[in-house]
Length: 492
Image (cartoon, rainbow, N blue to C red):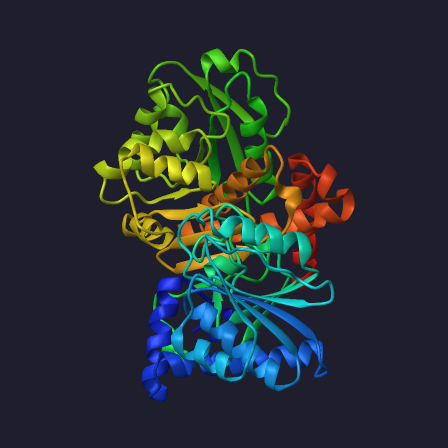
């Protein structure tokens, strides 16, 4: 069982946990927000000291705003110089309590949206929390932009306002916090996509959740080291898998080459690149250990004999219908497949047609959305979208600053936090690593997990040598060997 600290929840899951907490403690929502405000106050005093400070609070209409009002009320009682700006409206109970304490309160709306931030003031961002799920209106955007221009220190409550509570994307602007007090448990919006650029230092504020409050479908932070498949002394290359790498248009031969090369460096026994004849005629072999093959029309079945895994898509023509037929053939033969890049578009027509698709998909968020839209699939949330893929037996690797790996073993978030990986070919290298583990006999999800962990680890190693700016995908391949060598040495 993964404990609370290792778990991540969506906003919908958090609402369920809040209800469980209130039921167990026999309190209502007003009492809960007051308790949260008290815990926030204790954290603020601990981090910023008890001495009197100036504080400007921006409080929104929901529970996040209520939390902020309780926080600044406690700060006011401790001698802080507090000013509150309420955006449109506030929760009645904490608002009235602040008025009773004669805290200066100003209401901002379309007719009055002027405010000042003293240069020495700490700003409390309580505008939105994890409940934000749509683009900010024109009223909120300039307020957030003005806070970002003028505030030197900003404490965000739960999430920086403007960050989507589930996806972590800015909508389209967000508070640039220096510190974020995360209430109770990490949300997906604290980790994914844009989120790390706006949170500053994250700190979880314990509000009394227990393990039993955690929903069964909670996601988990993925940590640890990639696996090295142990080799026997009496062994040969076929013990470590044969994989075929399909793709590589004549204008993009490097993609499929990097995928195959990364797979071999990750322990694969035998790699074969398979291209259309028209592309193969323009291909210059680069890695002597890799076998080459070509096909014309539908003459491809012979290339998949005794194949343990297929990497399908790097550098692939998205318009050639032969690839959709080929993918259907591979699925019919139950050959494990990693579908990446151009291959994703050839899988899209199969999503609705098949109840079960035991494949690994490795899209970035744009490709993920396009797959759903092209198939006419619309979901209210990222959580629902992921559940759809999981229901079909698909292992989804949703790439980003933090990568999601969803499958029958659960949903995991791996935090890479390495901008150097944003370079051409990085995804092809990841696809190759996952294919290597798949061909070596790991399950679909374990192959995805270990491939992602290896990708993160070699990314960190390459960053130490080349830095974020100059890192290239081939540098990742170079670093696979020393990373896995260290793993081998640890076991000897």
